[in-house]
Amino acid sequence: MGISDLPALNACLNSVSTLLLSAGYFFIRRKQIERHRLAMTAAFVTSCLFLVSYLTYHYHAGSVPFTKQGWVRPVYFTILITHIILAAAIVPLALITLYHAWRERFDKHRRIARWTWPIWMYVSVTGVVIYLMLYQM
Image (cartoon, one colour):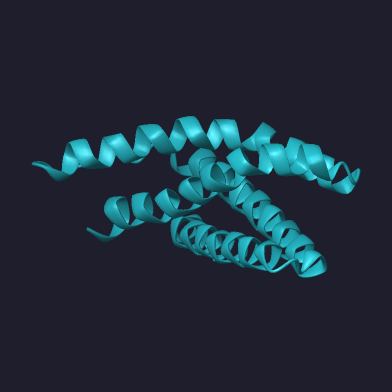
């Protein structure tokens, strides 16, 4: 696997994170606590692997310009800008949310998870959308 393969890997890791986050939500709604914990821990690990791969790629490849024109250009940049802002926010949110769960402070965990989960989902899904728009259009 070379550096040029990392964007596709990143999209796959974001897709897996999305599936794991969905599973975690499904499990907690059904009070399957252990499955929820496993799914959310796996989503966190997958997101960490994504971050390492993403940083490695951009360290070597630099910035990749979006060259498409027309209506798709403002759509792409709207998605990209919101993705970047929320991706920066999700790091401390996820860490705090997981910390409260690991410390069994479930009241605090639930309170922050109500914000963390939808933001994390948005970042994971839009990561895949950005990949598709940048590399597959």
